[in-house]
Image 1 (cartoon, one colour):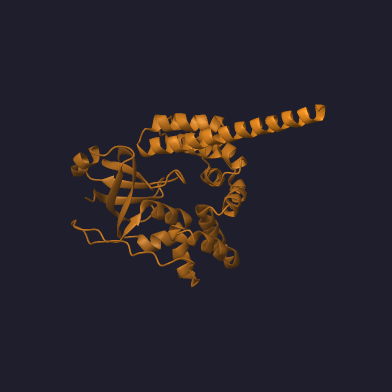
Image 2: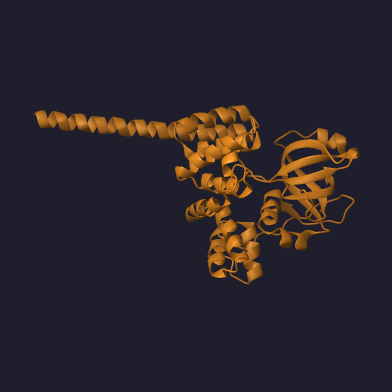
Length: 306
């Protein structure tokens, strides 16, 4: 009878323990979704509070997302050191996005403890790629292609291309390799405007392409009018013109780097109608990488496409 009672107690204890873990996981998941909904609605403080709660509950998705808020200054003060700490925490919990973001922080030396630590990036990038995270696979594809190791580059490109990664699709075609996805639909051309029409390219794709190989990007785009769509970060004055920071959509995956867009003063009214987080379509001329340039790329003589 005693053994029976002990077994019953053990069963109830195990059931209670499982319930606690399940409730904790459900709460963490709820926090992430709540934060995501708030972020999409541009309520960044609510997003930060939700993801803080999820981080405390042990949800690596919340930890990584909170890191991105600190990396960009959404709803919190911009702080690379805190962002780096959060990415490191998420990465150690096995979160692929956290591993990728931590690697990118090391590459760009963002945060005091990231200085001179670029050699640590590759391991985290490979960890993220092993979890089938397309941005990491695409990055490694370019990394190994530049080293002349196509036997290692192509499998990464193909894995990322199978998930629709545009840069990987472009590189596979350039290398004459098979693309394991359907051909993407042709991008629509912009309508109207005083310039020659150009194909629209998402900001995230342009940023990734410029970061992966600046020389090739300059060769392909210098002197061209580029039309792109992205997310407004901030508008300031620079070199006597208005300067708009434009990020790619899906910044929760990779909030690094931006397109710098220079506008002449006559565009003041249109620019002042924009808020941080707005989606906007921009058209401007790419004149190559500039001295002391911080952005992934800069567009000159820009205008907003209606």
